[in-house]
Image (cartoon, rainbow, N blue to C red; front, top):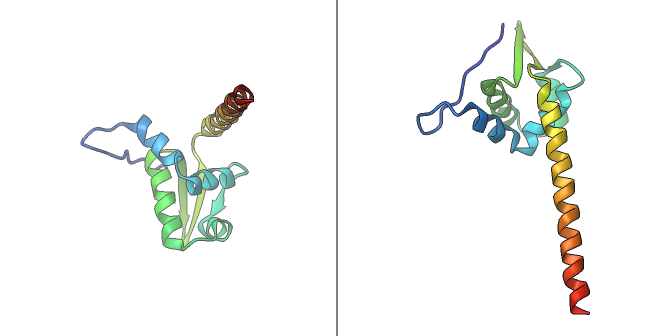
Amino acid sequence: MKHIRVLKRHGSPGLREDIFLALACERRVKIIELLKSGEKTTQYINKHLNIHPSVVSRHLNMLLSTGLINVKREGVSAYWSLSEKRVLELLTIAEEIAKDIIKERKSFYKSLEDEKL
């Protein structure tokens, strides 16, 4: 069963902004990267993030509320999976943009240093 709850900030649904907010956290991106290879248990995610389980739970619920991940509960176990694979493409594009910006900045600072000489 798919659970989707849209976050509400300042009284407006703003799902696009909530998705970017969810992806703005390194730990939530790590969770998505863990899930790209398939369904994972909460315990598996806890082990690989090496942070307190309550913190992992908050991050999982944030991603769940945006609709980026799903949860399937069986007894006391929870199994998490990506519900939207395109988020991986979005992360790849963001990484490419970041690399390009870093490259441009290095070039700019190098040109400033060259002007001083």
